[in-house]
Every structure is written in structure tokens, then in C-alpha cells.
Amino acid sequence: MIKKSISILAIVVTMILLATACGSGEKADLSANIPPKNQNTSTQAINLTPTNGSIDAGSISKDDQAYAYYLVFCKLMEDDPGLSAGIKYIGLDLSKTKLDGPENLIALVQDYCDKREYTLLIGNYEQLVGAGYINGDELYWEDGNLVSFADVGLSPDRLKTAASKWASGTGAIGSTYTVKKNDSKWSIIDETNFWIS
Image (cartoon, rainbow, N blue to C red; front, top):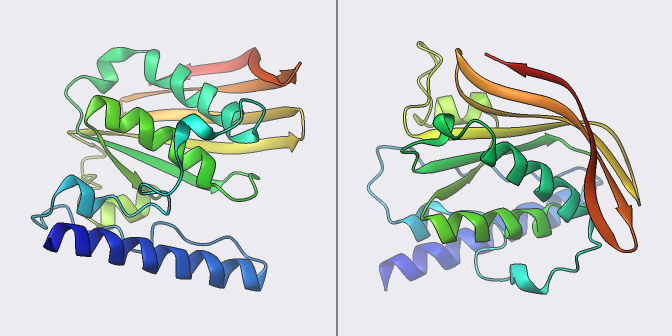
């Protein structure tokens, strides 16, 4: 009962943040309530995304722009699987995307995490360091990966974004991806500037 109440409260707080940001013309800071890592809470209580049960990933249309990002996310998670060995958390940094309203993308990534028993955290590197998930002194996330997007351009039928998967200062990969929509379906058509550390 307490877990359900915390989860409902988290959804309400996040929706208020979204509504406030929408009214001001700014993006909401979805990571404002990342709980400290040492806080003893369940997976459901930690998941403070605005889609916690409210959007079914299966109901999202394949031509939604969220799918362009999701394809890149899945490609990064498949590439260099050693970086993801033994993880419990996936951090998702959407602070440099041009995507209007991240709810559908978050729902898709949440579904991915649920199927693999990962906990999804929305936030950037600094926020995850501050919450105790990433060891900022040693540049290391022992049990997680941070997936980040830095958009070069976004239109109704094309996304170009520099994306990366980070586990440590010496364990990260990234590329610049071009994703295009043809016949209402997104596909990655180009990958350039690949790097690895």
C-alpha cells in the first residue's frame, strides 16, 4: 500500500512539473526527483517517470518521433554488451533533445527496462552523480549505463543525433546517427563518427 502511494505521489508530482513547464514554454525537468541511491525503496517507488503505467508502449504508433530515438537507444544497448553486463539501472539523459514531449519515448524505454528488470532513471550525469548512482570521483557507474542524446537536427521525418552509452571514463561508446521515416516506419540509415573509450 505504501509503495503504491509513493508511486502515485511520484506520478502526480511529475505531472505537475510537466504542466508547469508546458505553461511556461520550457521543458520540464523530469529528473528533479531522482531519489538518492542509498534510499531503500522498491523499483516502482524509484521510477519517477511521468509514464509510470499511464502510457502503454504497445499503443504508441510506429511513426511517432519517439521511435526514432528508441531505435538509437536499442542499437546502443546492443553494441558493446560488455558495458551493460550486470547493470541494474539505465539513466536516460534527454536534456539535449529537440523532442517535443518525451512521454512516449520514456514509455518505450520503460517497457524495455521492465522486460529486463532494470530501473529507469531520467537525468543527466551531474544529477545522477548528485543522487549517488555514479561515482563522480572515479568516473564510474558500477551498476548502470547512461544513454544520452545530443540532437543535431529533428524534423517530422528525420532525426540526426549524437548518442552515447556511458559506464565509465574508460567504458563508453557513441556515434552520430541519422534516422529516417519512410512509409510510416523509422529506420537508422547512417552511423558516422563512431567512438569508443
